[in-house]
Amino acid sequence: MGRTAVASVVTLCLIPVHLIVNRFVPDPYMDEIFHVPQAQHYCRGNFTSWDPMITTPPGLYFLSLAYIASLFPGLFCMRAVPSFSDSCSTSILRLTNGVLAVVCSILVYEIIIHLRPSLHDKIATFRAVVLSLYPLHWFFSFLYYTDVASLTAVLAMYLLVLKKKYICSSLLGAVSVLVRQTNIIWLLFVACTGVIEFAQSHLKDREEEIDKVKTAMQNDDFSDVHKGVSVISKLRKRRVNNGMRNQKNLAVETLNPMVHSSGLLDEIYSIVLVSWNHLLEISVLLSPFLMVFAAFIAFVCWNGSIVLGAKDAHTVSPHFSQFLYYGVVSSLFTFPVHFSFGQASTLSHQLLKNRLLGFFQGFMALALAFLSVKFFSIAHPYLLADNRHYPFYLWRKVINRHWSTKYLMIPFYIYSWFSIVCNLAKNQKKLWVLVYVLACAATLIPTPLIEFRYYTIPFFFMVLHSDIIDNMSWLLLGFLYLCINFFTMYMFLFRPFSWAHEAGTQRFIW
View 1: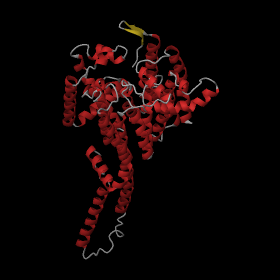
View 2 (view 1 turned 90 degrees about the vertical axis):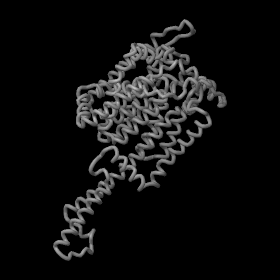
View 3 (view 1 turned 180 degrees about the vertical axis):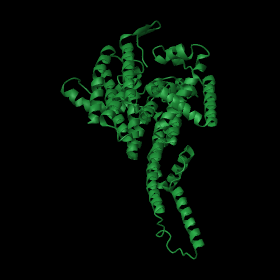
View 4 (view 1 turned 30 degrees about the vertical axis):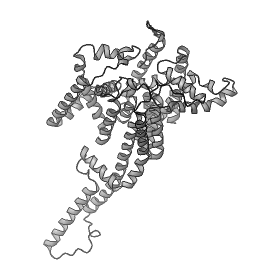
């Protein structure tokens, strides 16, 4: 019932907006001028032609071919199109992402109910619909970009790992990399979460054994375990009993190395121990993902770069500030959770609980953020020259308004990331949070251009695993997303402008 409800609501929201977008913007716009003609080449069976300005692999075009092939018999019977190649119009290609957006909403719902099985179906449905309205995801559901297909493939890969279908998950991981090559990071992230889930399931089995041992200790039932122990005297009997208790305590600690503490090092130790004891099973689990990763490395060595085209404009650069920007943007898009008195109080309590450690963490975060802003803030030529993107205005009006502004933003960067980590740690293992932060860093730091749509996948992982249990927060998020979507779509459709140096209509876009 929940899947049908989510798909129905999202579809009803998508169709009218799709029709309006294609009514006012019938021709390819922005990056569509590269993607649409390339997909049309594929529709004509020309798989050798390639636009050197396209940076991503052809995964989206193959998905479009499969989708259009399912539509073509109906379109041909209705005489809507005379041939298969004619069915690859801009509007139908855009509709690929519309269909994928519906699939993505169902995947979000499935992940929600898997992570929170006790959650009421109506609440899970509502949360899935709210996340489907996330502005960066929603906007590009109506254009022929790779973002929606990329997110859908990654979430499908993750859901299958949660369901322990590792081979199918790795195949979808390969699809995600074919859509956008930076998804190789999220493939490794998903593989790591698979190992963590595997270890946790085995640790639960060990906890059951521990419970049995504790029950035996409480009942003083050691006779079955230590048969044949001779008692010569009361003193010797006391020593034997003490020795048996020590053995029992040692057995408990051996069965569960996290019995006394649950710090990061303890989690790493326990997972390494479980993985070593189940080395063959872990190898089988990881091998499909490692094969995809090896194929990706071979491609990068052969291609000479991670991107396919426009290599000069997309060189890997140490853009550490991008990591900080993501923290602020994601926190703002979940402001009821992160910018509240309750959250500020929780963070203060966490830092003051151990003042020395809290001071060290704050000092290191401040130092690293300062160095990132000072030496690793990149103003990409595309960012400075293209006033069609919102980051252009944020850079000019906020970040670069005054030489001191970027430094005044540092406390917001630090607070945002502390809040994100603290919120995730409420429901997730510390190791999971660490792997997530590393995946975000590996995805965002090498990217020189500030593009908010690069934040979509890490944002979805963050929200799906965050501790957002207040329904009012979800209502506020839904209202916020609706307002932003209305504004951005209005600016895109009804506030066009022109450039003096270039013919054509320009429009505001994320």
